[in-house]
Length: 297
Image 1 (cartoon, one colour):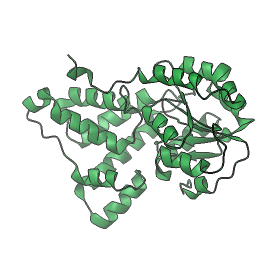
Image 2 (image 1 turned 45 degrees about the horizontal axis):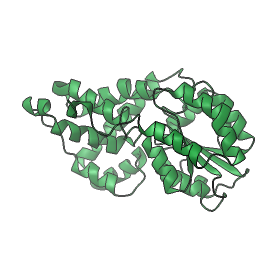
Image 3 (image 1 turned 135 degrees about the vertical axis):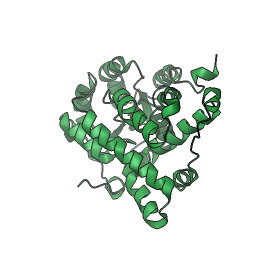
């Protein structure tokens, strides 16, 4: 059984002068599309009785999780956001389908606990709340589908080369909202787990917490970098005064090659902060909209 204790992060001691946090789904692995389209979304439709509006449920879930500024957020707030988008949609209202509100899940999200199945189970043990029980069943079904479906997905080109280069000068930690068991399996399956000092998933807290616990007071300014493919990764980096390298959705191979040939070297040479980083982030932020396409027309 994997150890998901946050103490692994807070007690982490640097071996190098530099730190790099790396997201996993959609960043290291081309796994976002298959996980959401084949595992998350079918189970959203099944467990929340959205069969009559499956087309619109799929569009909402793909927008939130793949093609918007919320790409990469934790599964529980993402689920609530998908349902809220469905409630607003005229086509759904016309079909007179009841979209669940999930008030107790909203309370769980806002409680400040680490948003993973173990924390959810603790609340269920105390409350026996039916909405949370259904949420856990859904979440476990998603995990089972991912374990069954998502295999043989290699890292993007230039990921392995980048990790090899970084490992000589930087401490590497996986910083992800994915369950730790899946992360461990995927990184080990592809022979890259040895590059990571810690593989931190949703059970160890938010990405912001991962970076704070692992780096707080341990590295010099501009010696901490987060590599990610979602605005939440950028937000987590900025909350900790860290630099950010974007892996652009839809342009992942190009992004990793640029990191290997250019960005990584600039970071380790102290030439990353400032104009170079700003240009990369400007390019990244233009790729992920805030307004769903069905609200624009």
